[in-house]
Image 1 (tube, rainbow, N blue to C red):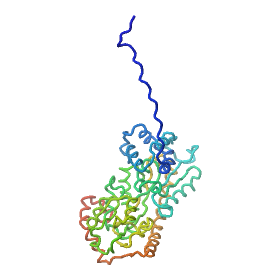
Image 2 (image 1 turned 60 degrees about the vertical axis):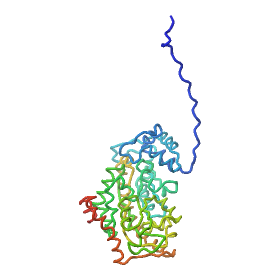
Image 3 (image 1 turned 90 degrees about the horizontal axis):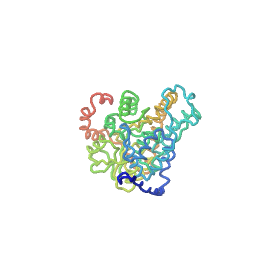
Image 4 (image 1 turned 90 degrees about the vertical axis):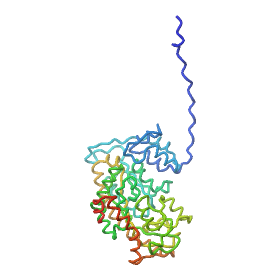
Length: 412
């Protein structure tokens, strides 16, 4: 009996030969990702990006896999290689009820990866080391602490510390709170100019109700656990053009600001032209002479060697900025309670030590600026009042923007 033509089985299509893998374009920029992602506590985030670049991350994720790949490609990192390592890594099982660390020890220690964006000699790096030392002293071989002092040395931007921690590539990091204002608008209240006049006043607020409120707002919108606040401190203005004694002296100057609308509006009211630039780009422009001014604590100005290019430095104390110490929420929540508690104690100790070191660094920075031949200017009370008066409209609008409760927390 003949089979109907429609019932004949069509032969399968010929198999395509797999294309040979392209060699990695660069090895050195992938060092951080290769070392850390292979032990990532959230490998599923990277698995999806490897299978399907259009995959969508959970709503709370800081950067979707597609965005992570885009950022990494721009920096010359081989994200496909990172995804391969993440796929091969063994997932650490979460154990919600873990009252004592020794009871849950596995064949491998819990790895804690700390990172920042400054040299090992800075007070922030030293504070991270103090945290790691305290944890290792308590738990010994049960934990393994690793450090990357300056992610910019590996081709990252300073702002990349945010997604490196939230995605789990790093466990712990810090960054100026202004970098989070796009996602947590409430943080803008501590970007307001001249809300604090003394370190003691600002520290009391950040260690008290204000800091607790801001930490809650961050944790509601970002996958972090906030354990404390490092002090970045009061910020001063440096420039390459002329001495700045009053607000009028800033007229027409291009100035780099942190990624904060409040800070940008502040300098616009002062007559300058604010530019939102990452630290790496700002330093490059300062060295090239295409950026007139910048504002930073004096210690930062010296750390990044800006004082070698800017001959004029003015003590304005216009902003007081803190740096939250944030942990990858997925990793922190998976740790045993003993480790969580010890980490909180270690961070509190490190914050206190870092603030002492900040004062010492400020003194050293003043000496370094003076010895370089640059001019360090302290405006008179009348001259300083011109800065405060110029930004009065911003402060007048703040109550409507942030609400009476937020303004009460900053003492306004």
